[in-house]
Image 1: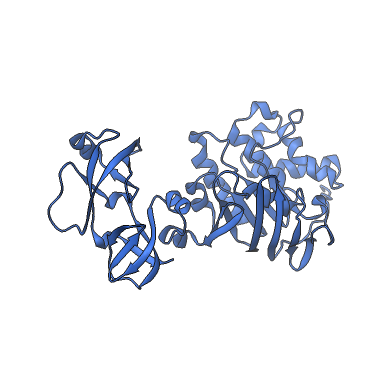
Image 2: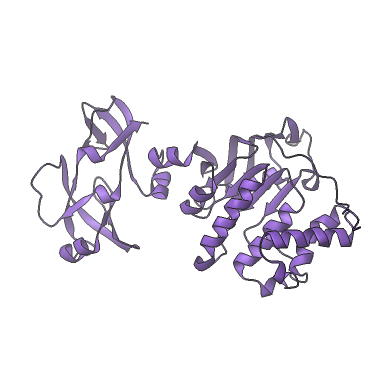
Length: 363
């Protein structure tokens, strides 16, 4: 009879991670107030330097907070300089770094087994457990390969297996798809989603693109300038972006203004909109709802104005036209319209948007 493996004792998955802290890191002032529940995948998105990776490092214990607290199921992991501090190795965190950080001199098998060995498992038990994880991620045939012999997607799978092999309470992933080529990203994204759903603890990932965030997350939190400016389900983020960055992320035009009697005043310019409550509002319009013309159009559009073309950006199935003027926005036109309009940067075009194509929400 084969003896049972003796692996290090692991903690149960966390039920709730509570973050309410601030820290200064160079020019970044990060202030966070957030909760993540067991079995939930939270994606952090935001521009470079917004504080996404710093947040993960603080949760992992690799960066001390200046004040506030980080708690897991009510237990304080970091209470600031005067409070308690739990060492990273005692937090039950599985961390998958953007650049994998696999040991170059170790095989894929021994990279996965490394954490188990550090936690007291015998070499035989650790390697047996690591082998089961390599089989689970479809890389058992690569067990003897060194990191330099693996593709970016394979290396990231090994890094994920190394993190999950320890049965952590929390799983943190820093842009797990950023270093993967386009041909491998779809498969890795699908596999990663499956592994995330199978993991029963708290899950936080920094997303490289909106597609990654929306495909992998149950909830999205947007960080800008060290602050969470919006948090919600994918549908809520897409339907009601609250900042210019979020609107760009989901591919919408956003205008912040004041509504009165069916008109939104946007810094001196105005948009005719469906009936909306009076006061500060956010108005959004899809780029495909923006029509462009060489001559002033006639007909039903309520919003018509002239604007300069400031940029032309080819996309997969359209041309994205960036327009300047009093109401800067992006239009998406078909290849046929592109050929007919023959646009050039610096030219003036006529813009038309139907009032019914504009969505208005309270600011």
